Length: 155
Image (tube, rainbow, N blue to C red; front, side, top):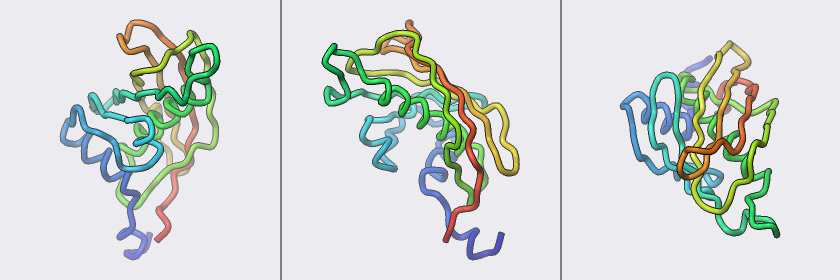
């Protein structure tokens, strides 16, 4: 990468990497609209996993009172992306290329906890996994895996 490209960085990558490096806890993730829209909070961070709390708003519920599957998938996708971003060097970013979600239980409006980890970061592709739990962290709502392309940030 050239020096020009190195000067550019994904602000989300920078924020999450710094939070993880410092062992950050209870950090609001208002760094992009997708995270802010779900009131994301980095609850715990470590080298192997991130725990992120999301809040599903009333607008994400369906007529039967449960949170839509797309919202749950979005929470898992964001958590896995944050886990991968936390492991990338400055000047790099990622984007989901494959996402597999398995729903286990209905989720209701309110808080959810995602526990996300990285299986491997290669030169071009990273692999991640996550589980989404209810507010008590006692019931598994959904789980997922993803492949993400790793690429330099475009200046």
